[in-house]
Length: 217
Image (cartoon, rainbow, N blue to C red; front, side):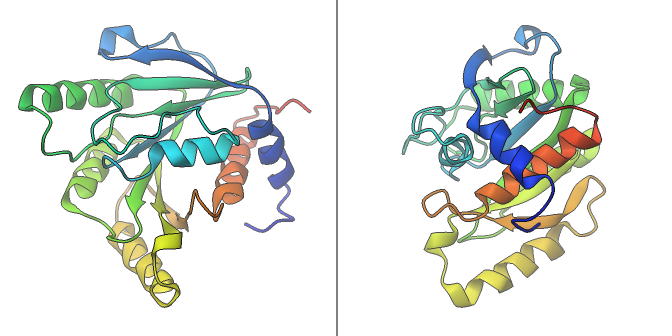
């Protein structure tokens, strides 16, 4: 996608509008009623999910940024006006979380993925410094089994040497190439520098347009 992509301006307008926290669900029976299309964000603890959500919406405190792994313990829903919703999913792969809590999160995520017809795509955030790790592959297995469309977003581009960026992109793209529910494009982002942020806004606007959802001017 380029700056002159026809959906780029729609994406900018979408994320420049209101974005408010509306719901937190810790159990499958406490999910919000069906509403606008949803875009969920998943990733290992401390991968930079909160920072990316803040960068996408141009806010500093939409999602709380923490250096404590396992801080996000619920599915947190944010409304982009009446057009769409962003969903911040609990971080996975944090070893210090109790087995009971880990099982509870797993049950919540599976229930959400299995029964959420308005979920258009899950963006799986991967630490760009490390590439795909075993917990990431487990999440991708879950998404493939649920037949939920997902795309890979690499984070922390500003912390990766420039000469290693293309190789990391190619490595991760190859790692998901044969997965049935994976979108083929991998985006490398930096919440600090803004790399890839406009690209994600554009991609979300395009998905909405393809579903016939109008973005208010």
